[in-house]
Length: 400
Ligand SMILES: Cc1cc2nc3c(=O)[nH]c(=O)nc-3n(C[C@H](O)[C@H](O)[C@H](O)COP(=O)(O)O)c2cc1C
Image (cartoon, rainbow, N blue to C red; front, side):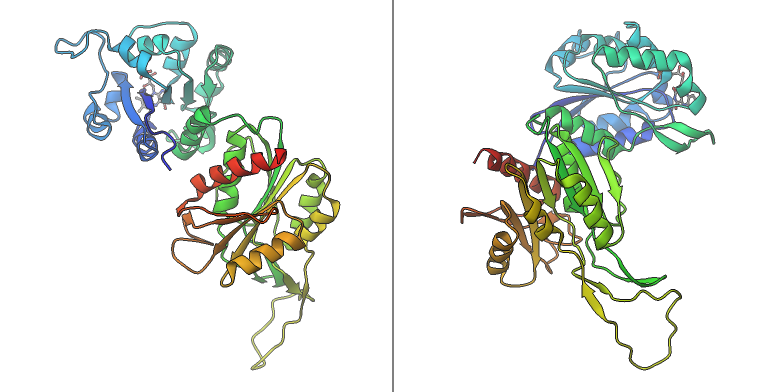
């Protein structure tokens, strides 16, 4: 699904080391269907030349207000009028200061004064520069003026300083740009999502688990947050980075997941259970690593808490409960049985085992079953797109 098809995005680039990451951001935007127009400062040209942005965007770069061979005499107005959003990444302390004070002394700052579409600023600079009172004051001013500030991340910077100031991950910037275009239909809703695998230890170095990557659950959490929900994500071990605004509870075992979910469940408007929770765990967990010895050993397993069944028991009127079923056969039969047994409002089922659907795949081939007996086959789509379709359906269940 091309979330940004027919959208024109202005990408502003200013003079910092992180300029090279703007190219990656542009690729994200283009893959989502956006037309990207690049306006850059003269100083940005020291880091990445305009030819690169011109070649990748497919449009002339806006660099100078007063070029002699310019195609359009007032590009700062025409680009601004046609823009659906503008993002400056990376944004130097300098451009932040200029925009906070309405200064327009080059192509990018003049263009930004004329943009009325949503504007995002992604600061990137040395930690002391970022923490400088003037920069913080300017960012506060920009926020008050309606700019969306994409907070930098913390870590080791190019200048070797350690602290906040590193340009936000291009994927995080992309996801905040997407949010600008999403409906706000989940505003005021508390959504609990579970994701990833669980790990059931048998000794301090071994566990029973499954290959769930967490991608589908994380996509749902991101999509719901983007659509205005207050999201609690309870997740087993994964390597996925999440936007800051999602409250993330990390767990290991099925029991920890159960406790974390139950703590949030009663006040939740919707609970979407995507996690691949272990059904069994070793009865005993050895205190020390089990040594290789006998030819055969037996591992005794016991059932873990059935989180969905427990949620069904305590489900309050109006609460929406959605489950996932990953099956290797008899998809419809297994999914509809689970739907009824766990009193779900909807179940999203998919056959696992193929390369394009299930655990570690980027895409999913989902069939939805509803409690009124209806079902719906979704086309093969990436997990991000599938997450939005699921949310489109879930919001209608509330009024059904
Ligand atoms: C190697 C190098 C790296 C720089 N990195 C940054 C940076 O990450 N962030 C920043 O605000 N300024 C950085 N600067 C300073 C800016 O380039 C400088 O303030 C410049 O005036 C910004 O101009 P512009 O905002 O018009 O692009 C760097 C300068 C040099 C020489």
